[in-house]
Amino acid sequence: MTNWLPELPQGKGPLYVRLAQRIADDIVSGALPAGAKLPPQRDLAYDLGVTVGTVGRAYGIVRERGLVSGEVGRGTYVLGSSAAPAGAVPVNGIASPALFRPLEEKPVVTPVSTPAWTHLAMANPDPGFGGTRTSVAPTGALRLDSTSAPEVGQAQAIERVISGIAREMPHEIASYTRLVPDSWRLAGQQWLARCGWTPASETIVPTTGARGGLMAIISATTMPGDRVVFEELTYSSIARGVTLTGRQPVAVARDDEGPIPEDLARLCAQQHPRAIFLMPTVHNPTLGQMGAARQAEIIAIAREHNLWIIEDEVYGSLHADGISPFAALAPERTFHVGSLSKSVSAGIRGGWIASPPSHAQRLFTAHNMLTGGLCFLMAELAARLVLSGAADDLRQRILQELAARHEITQGLLAGQTFNASPQTPFIWLKLPEPWMSGTFKTAAAAQGVLVDDEDEFKTGRSARVYHRVRLGTSNTHTREELIKGLGIIRDLLRNASTGYDSFE
View 1: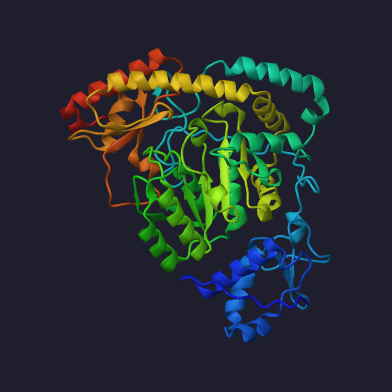
View 2: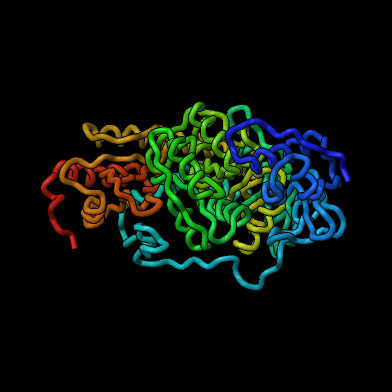
């Protein structure tokens, strides 16, 4: 048994959280080496002058973070960075420490005999799970309700790469994906790197797009009944997914920079959520950007209340500037997620997570269980596009196209109030009187243009009304189609009396 008596860090947070942080810090520093046995909870409680419950909760936190294993009758052992002590077993529903070995040691994919997932297209949205957006667009509709990458020649680049994969790797295409090649993690490192930060190779988990990765994070870090914090306006598809899996989304008030720290601290103290979902570089739908000071406040609250941070940066890949990612400043609790959908091609479904080291293998397993496993062809295609430089070439072409469409939008909607950026494939449009968001959406649809009303982005019922809609500028096939769609939007905005009419 290790002769270890910690000195508790000073701070405002609960004692058990500070004790857990001390254990984590001492594991990282080597003061608690891999294989060391922590003192029995009762002994440590006596030595520190605290309750046994305080020590038990601290041990539970570090166990959830994959830093230690515990077994009744044997004690609690430090796992270190890669391996668990022999004979360790699941505790309190936490997966076996064997799951925390590096990806190259034990790639785990359960073969499946049915497709990983089946797309169920619905003509009408389900207000409980599907939001307000129509999944299947009417024939001929102009879709300003999507922000996928514009077409700039992706098919030609993809054709060349896929032809090479088919020639060189026919067996892997025909089989299930049981390996994670180093190249897939290297591509994730390269694509997620930003503002001087590059994630470590062993933290990279390839995913079937960002959404599959986000749901894997939720599943791996929370249990049914746990609360997850979302801004009151957010990428609500994930908030609805949280509900579908038995978790509870809770809304935090926000301003132009993101969650308001005072309200987040209140939520944490009263409702004890397990994670928070953030879009710090480009907030969807408002285009808000978080400042460094706000970021530091959120990290402090997350550390005080043991909150996981889920950082969605799918739009961040279109912005070279900005603040350092949360993953660079709080790597022990941040999951950084990126994909190719906005900056290369949504059809590839290629994405990556930079995970806290303790959770990389757990996420890999959770992702496989939720999605049926990685599609070899898509994962290999995504990696080759990134490593060959083709993805970055396409990104630059997409940025040029977005800038041109931004100029078109500024001209056609001159005089209107909206948030926009040349690097972002949507605008957040303020509606003039007497338009309401839902009424405007219905009126636009009657004219053959699909837009997103504000309810599409709400975490839940809210008394706050924005009177805004989001218009995607990247999804129309051509600039001419965008001009046509925005022309219809402009005419509706100018004809204010139309806002009173029924379009049923």
